[in-house]
Length: 67
Image (cartoon, rainbow, N blue to C red; front, side, top):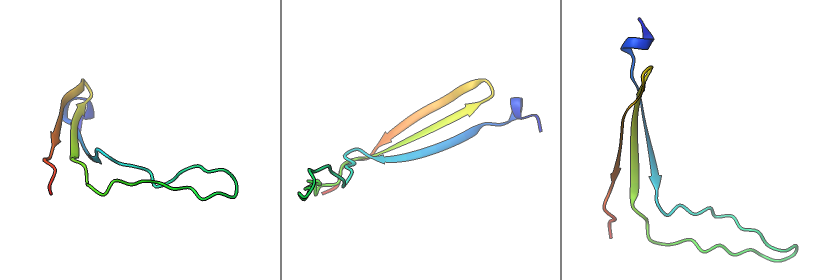
């Protein structure tokens, strides 16, 4: 197989738009508090296709928030 002419690599990634790390910094001896939103944000899916010649296609899909 000639990978330079006959192969296309496809990858998909999904993200939440309001991702928050549940980690915080605090002074020594104090408790840290982290506010995490209770509402789920919209989902974002990104799809990309590449070949030897470069980027062939890139698309994104944003789902509507539920609730």
